Amino acid sequence: MSSKNICITLQYDGSRYDGWQKQGNTENTIQGKLETMLTQLFEQPIEVNGSGRTDAGVHAVGQTANFVVNTPYGPGKILELMNRYLPKDIAVTDAKVADARFHARLNARSKTYVYRISTGFVRPVFGRQQILYLPETLDVEAMRKAAEYLIGEHDFTSFCGNKHMKKSCVRTITSIDIEEVTTTLGDAEYEELRLTFTGNGFLQNMVRILTGTLLEIGEGARKPEEMAAILAAKNRESAGPMAPAHGLTLWKVEY
Amino acid sequence: MSSKNICITLQYDGSRYDGWQKQGNTENTIQGKLETMLTQLFEQPIEVNGSGRTDAGVHAVGQTANFVVNTPYGPGKILELMNRYLPKDIAVTDAKVADARFHARLNARSKTYVYRISTGFVRPVFGRQQILYLPETLDVEAMRKAAEYLIGEHDFTSFCGNKHMKKSCVRTITSIDIEEVTTTLGDAEYEELRLTFTGNGFLQNMVRILTGTLLEIGEGARKPEEMAAILAAKNRESAGPMAPAHGLTLWKVEY
Image (cartoon, rainbow over all chains, first blue to last red):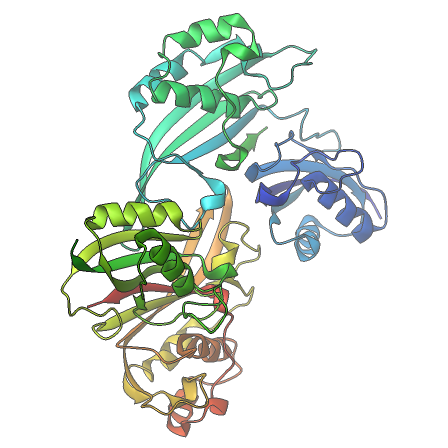
C-alpha cells in the first residue's frame, strides 16, 4: 500500500444538488457524494479538495479535485471504480497521480465559467436544464462594451454575493467572450448567447451577478458606461441581480 | 372565424411520458397534453393526429401532427400560444396551415429514427437521458453487414412488438446508417454509435427490436448472416431483445 495524491476531473449535472460544498448534516452535495463513496470504497476516511465551490444548481464539465488515498490501484482503476459507484449525474472523466504537494484549490491559476442563454423564439427541450431561456433581443455590442470595464485586476465587492466577506475581493478577469451561437436540432434552429469568463478566481455568486448585470445592459435598462461606477461603488446593491444557477457551468480549471 | 388545418412539428423529451398515444384515463401522454391544452386554449374540442405513436420514454426532434381548429389566429400566433402553455419538455418548433385534406399519419411517406449508444469508458452526464450507455467494443462492420439484409421491402413480423397484430407487417426500409461519432465536452471525449433508420413506416417497437438484434450481432452473440433467417421466421422470438426506449428519437417525418 502506498499513499497517492489523486487529481481528478469531474463533470456533473448540478440540477439536483445543493452545490459542491459539504454543509453540516446535508449530504446532498457533490463533495459529500464523493467523500461518502470514496470512504466506503477504500475503507478509510477520505477528504476531497475541490478547485472551488459551485453554487446549488450550477454544473461542471471540468471541475477538478484531489484526494489522498492509500491504495495499490493506479489512476485508471480508481476512475473506473469511482464511476461504477457514482450517481448518473456525476462522472470522473480523468484521474492522475499528482505530486504529494498538489492541492486542487491552492494551486489553481485560472478558471473558466460559461453562462448560456437561449434567446430564440422556441424554448429548447433538450439540454434545457443547462441553459437560461430568455427570449429577448439583447444589445450584444453594449454587453461587450460593458464587459471591457471588467477586464483586469479590480476589487469586485459589488459582485460578491457574500455580504460578510472579510477577505480581499480583488480578482483578475483575463477575458469575457460574448458569442452569438446558432445550433440546429433536426429542422429547428436555436439562437444562443454564450458568455465565457476566465480569471484567476471568482467570488461567491460572482459570475452569476456579472451575468445578471450584463443582461440588464443588454436589455437597455443600464448603459455600458455605468459598469465603471458599479465597480467603484464596492457595494453589492450597485450591481444587477444574480442570474439563475442552471445557466452556469464551470468549464475548466488550469494549473 | 374560419376552420384551419394546422400542421405542427414537435420536439419532446419523452422521459416522463407514457408515450405519444392517449390511452383510456391516463393523460400522461404527449397527445393527451396537447389535446387538453388546445381544447382549453381554443375553447373547443380538439383532436390531434400524430404521424405515428412513439413508445413510452422515446423522444422526438421532428414529430409531426395536425389538428383542425376554428380560430382567427395565424400559425405563428398559434405556435407562440402553444409554447406558452406546454410543459418545458414539449415544444412546437414549426406550425403552418395545411390543406384541409392533410393528415399527419395518412400522408406520411417516410420516417427517420435515430438510436444513440454511448460506448466509451466514461458514462456521459449531459444528455444521458437520450442515449443508451453500453461500454462495449462492438463489431461495427458486422452490424453494417447485418443491416444490409433489412434494406428493402420485407415482412417484419419478427421485429413487431405487438403479438396480436392483425394487419400486414410488410414495410420498406430505405436505409440504415451506422456511424461512429466522437463528441467532446471540455477535455472529455465520448464515443458514440449512432444508428439512423429510414423507411416508409415502422411497426410497434420495431426500431428498438432491430437495434437490440443488431447489438447482439455487434457483441458477437450472432452472425450477420443470421439476419436472413430471422426475417424469414416471421416470429418475434427469432429476433433479439428490445433496446431500451430512452436511446431512441423520432428524427424526421417526410410527406
